[in-house]
Image 1 (tube, helix red, strand yellow):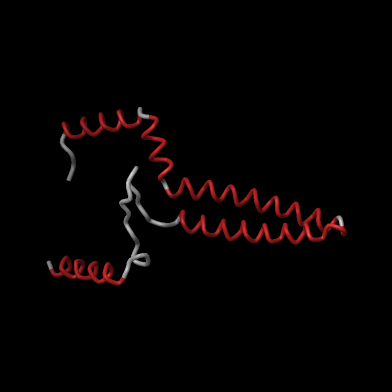
Image 2 (spheres, rainbow, N blue to C red):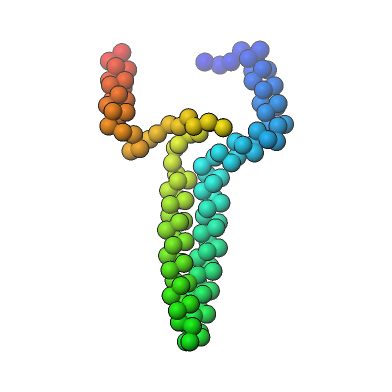
Length: 127
């Protein structure tokens, strides 16, 4: 259903006023799961490179072989951190700014929530 001209003008005015508020824009950006996941992915890439450097240094200097092992463990941990961040960036979770309203996917729902969802879908299908 398209908006009337008056509603469109009101909507554009609200949009402009919200875009001019830097505090609101910052809050929206920081509550975005994709923004947070992107930052975590960058951190994990830096940690992987640091771990790789430690592995190379530990292998090059045979007296500091333990440093290579530490680097390898750091690389494994950073890779696991990257995988978790990547999985979170793919989620469809919605958050309200300054609140806790979320929408769960079917996999993240409890048994009662899934049953209620199926019940509502069944009633919508019958119409």
